[in-house]
Image (cartoon, rainbow, N blue to C red; front, side, top):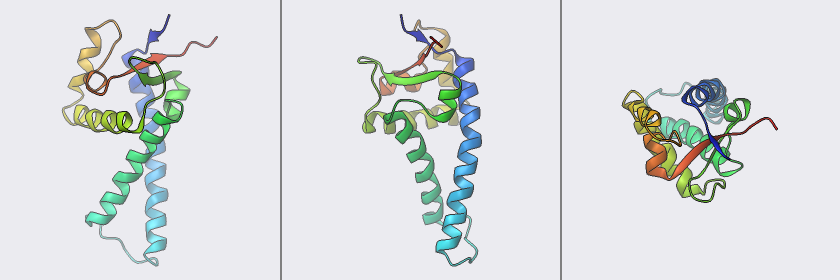
Amino acid sequence: MIAPASLFRRLAAGIYDLFIIFALLLFATSLALCLNQGQSLKPYAFSFSLFLISCVIFFYTWFWTHGGQTLGMQAWRIQVVNQKTLEALTWPMAINRFIFALLNISFFGLGYLCSFFNPHKLSAHDFISKTRVIYISPN
């Protein structure tokens, strides 16, 4: 039987991933500084902001399409899968999941409340993107 991941595990993995994202953004900024010949970057420049956002999107979508686990998800033994086939996500599914998860977070995470009212503990962005997060037992 496939057990759904608890909200606690999902949030803990998300916090773990935030540390990795912070390091990724520091690296991306240092790379951008090198490409800008060490000159100061305008913090609100559209191209720089787009570059940083692209790094975050690529981080999540790449991990979700290649095994279904970010590093935080690996540490907390959870995996995001296609609802129907229980396989890794396709690129369009991963991008949809990222967009709707971002919307969920921007509304103070209210979409996570759905996970309390269904047997598979699906959040709002899981419903919309046709994904689910499962717990991987240590066996």
